[in-house]
Length: 312
Ligand SMILES: Cc1cc2nc3c(=O)[nH]c(=O)nc-3n(C[C@H](O)[C@H](O)[C@H](O)COP(=O)(O)O)c2cc1C
Ligand SMILES: Nc1ncnc2c1ncn2[C@@H]1O[C@H](COP(=O)(O)OP(=O)(O)OP(=O)(O)O)[C@@H](O)[C@H]1O
Picture (tube, rainbow, N blue to C red):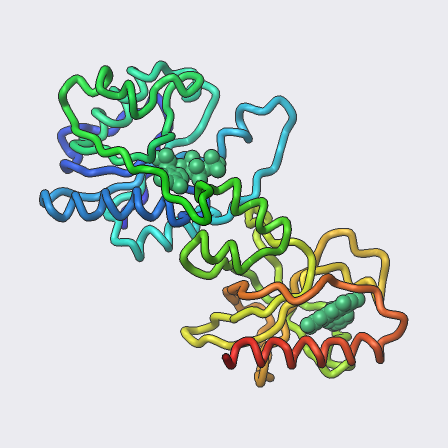
């Protein structure tokens, strides 16, 4: 997959661009709804011997449009988005830099520049996709902007339990720790990448050594707590338990949650290595125990519960 960044008003040379079927949207999470939109574009491209593309934006519009400075975290930071799209057989990823200037483009100008200008022959978007200034362009009035140069397909609402599958819904579920529900909405396990860094080296003294992970600040994490996880490392999958929290039994100084994983039946050194953590089940809240012995007893129960969960 080729990734091409576009900054308005810079144009690519139309003659050099292949005829393309494109899916368009922000696509944070690449959830079930997004997958339907993207798969439709990939299938249509194959059927018509064209290239397939995803047209997306970065950063999230709220970073640019909100008055106060905010730091947005993503369900799928750019790198994860790229990896998932690659697996979905998308040929090209166009990333449009989101700016105030871009947000003020009229719907017609937006289509001229980014759809007709990228040689898109067929555009696929969801029922609620909007474009151009204040989102005035949408799938009901797009006909007036196509100039008969491209066709389009509108994907109907994908729902789960009578509710639209959406990035917003998934963000809320993550903040409640409901990773099993998140995984249903994503159609795959939610995951984050992290690099193993040095911790307090306390874990090995309590019989549960943990890999402490440094997570990219762009990545969204679930709510604090203990979780059943799988660890992907060098092509292997391991089961384990994660504590995302502040270690309140030992200190009240931590203000930012730390992610630690105890990988079952594994004892090699992992410092500096990159792990992918898949979140499978929420087990409990992190607690402040009166003493280390009680904490150890609780972790032993967590281990039993998680091993049982993975073995059924
Ligand atoms: C499955 C699991 C559950 C944990 N639960 C708690 C908890 O409820 N409260 C707490 O203070 N620490 C909890 N811990 C964190 C331990 O305090 C932590 O692993 C230990 O302090 C080691 O820290 P280190 O990796 O920096 O050496 C848990 C750790 C694991 C692996
Ligand atoms: N549940 C869904 N069913 C069908 N299409 C969808 C669904 N969710 C999103 N889409 C479409 O996918 C593209 C990307 O949408 P977008 O990134 O706004 O996702 P979203 O999940 O609706 O996000 P948010 O919760 O932030 O509004 C758009 O074309 C949108 O219409």
